[in-house]
Length: 444
Image (cartoon, rainbow, N blue to C red):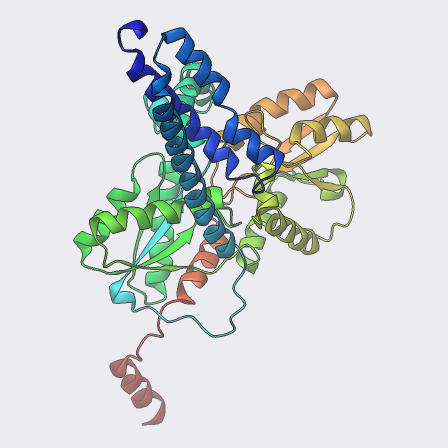
């Protein structure tokens, strides 16, 4: 078949092979050896292909032109990607402006809780994984824009069976939809108790309700202000950042008039901290002391490149842990260990697996794991921590292994969310009738 269309094959080859090379070249210092290498790396391949296919030497200028075009396309793609990365990197720097943000009118505002989502049943696992693995904001590698779709399909093919088996261990799907639905309802009730009438809905990236569905719901409501409140308390571009990106992308297509406001961080809110403290103490039986347990705070891991690029996630985790430790009066026998690393990339260390081995070797037999970055229980806690790592800890010699439950709808956590929303909404107008009644009862 190749022999039948040699000029077409050679043209496509010269162009396509240079796109990733141009992408990589754009990362190299101009006129450096690496830069020169990636400019010329395709030449031996093109020469070999030309000789093999038997094309005329007069076609060489066309091949060179197509190779240059491929380099230009790849370089432009990398510059565009880098521009978006720089924009996101600047967004990750905490706000230093002391002025209060513009207040929102609650009658025009929809509060949207943000999360990645999860497969509601085992049948949903392949679609969920495909969307997850195909997201370049979450999983990134060189020239991923060319191969992300193929990469996602391969991962689904190799991992979906094992994933379904893991989800089966926790009931045949993720409970995250029901948990988030209850959190939205609890927040709505708490805001109503405070006299607030803002709508509260939620949006997922990789399972329904998708960003497009969320924006359509906002459009039907007639409200134009959206308050984005992440259920990832600690900011990361891979989680909160991607949620916001895809919602704004959907809004541009569906309703460009929607205005977005990002809620303030609450990872140090007293209510959020107290919810974790209560969950930790819930694991103690009558007569037991927390001092008997070694505490391991286990957040979800991130690739190291995220930290290098300025992602504040790990530092915010440390701040939350420090405040929890202060609240429980603990200064020793604790550590932070990251879980859920996948793939060949370097991830934040130490891993929970390594930490379990280290502390059991040092003689600690009673362990309490605190999934500190999770506000709902799902596969990372119910399966990974509570089943898989429990089995590992037993093999390593742990005699007592416990995991604190996620804070879910803990009243203090809901209070933290409500306070975060309240801080952005405009003060409510005083109730004239209630004020008049109060004056009548207390003055007359």
